[in-house]
Image (cartoon, rainbow, N blue to C red; front, side, top):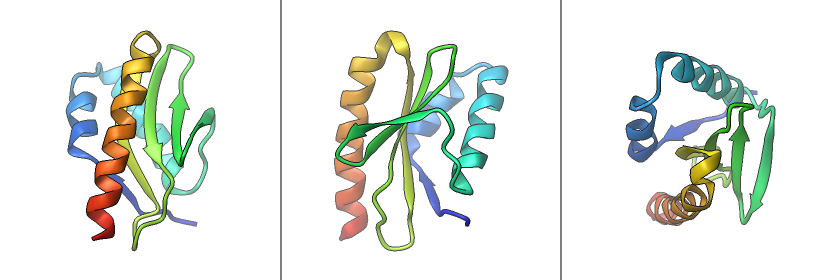
Length: 102
């Protein structure tokens, strides 16, 4: 199973700030995500999920199928900024889902 994954510009901006090691870890998880394997993840409710790493890194994504898109990778963060990151991911989720459903 290959999922169609959309990566937001906001996520790309966050990703660019990561170290090369962190980018490699994220890339590996996103590769797994594209084939339907989510690994260490959890639901945050309302179709928002997070991928988790032991170092506290988080990636937030939506699992709502819209047209040909299966998953939207919304935002990333770390355990210490989790509350604000989840809030931002929820806002991005609402905006992208609205725009894609038009």
